[in-house]
Length: 263
Image 1 (cartoon, rainbow, N blue to C red):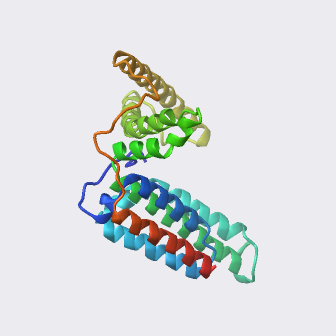
Image 2: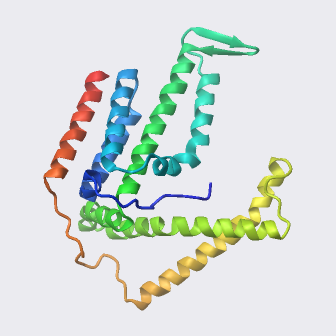
Image 3: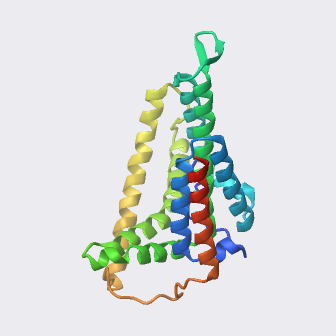
């Protein structure tokens, strides 16, 4: 669970990598909203076809995508079981002991789990095909209208960039803290739920102290470099829209239209 791949870029030469990060973010948001609005098999098939096509165009190995969504597979399994056991709409299809399974529960278990899985893969592809620097620059550009209104658009983008940078670092430190506690006799997989929760408390305290130490060091580094939030700055890489970005936006709009018609 601590092998987090959030923010880990997979270098490749593909049409998805070459897209402008701003266009990728906007298109990804539209696709994710469309996926969560899927309500029938035809829409689900269209969403799966789009995600599969993007995966092929991105030229990212399937094992990297699966590694990025593996920590959330348990959540998907629990969500599927909840829908299967607690949704009581439709006709009763089968009965096993005290449990009865309805057609509505089976449909909900399959549909909602598939929707979440497709959304996770789509979101993972954005992270795998876009560097953290490109993502932060894209957020800075998309949030720039907020700065004109007096809101901290640049600061929000910077906080997002720092979050992307320190998630893998904190995950590595959490793993090191757990190893150190285990060498000192800490047992994280023994006893009941209450004992296991109590064994995690020292890890959380140490990780919180580590996070505060990183935050203090980062603030000192920004002060030493005379950082000023919201100051006008140029970028090493200019963000320019090309014909690829227009094609991606058109295909995304076509996908949303297709979902609407199929619905």
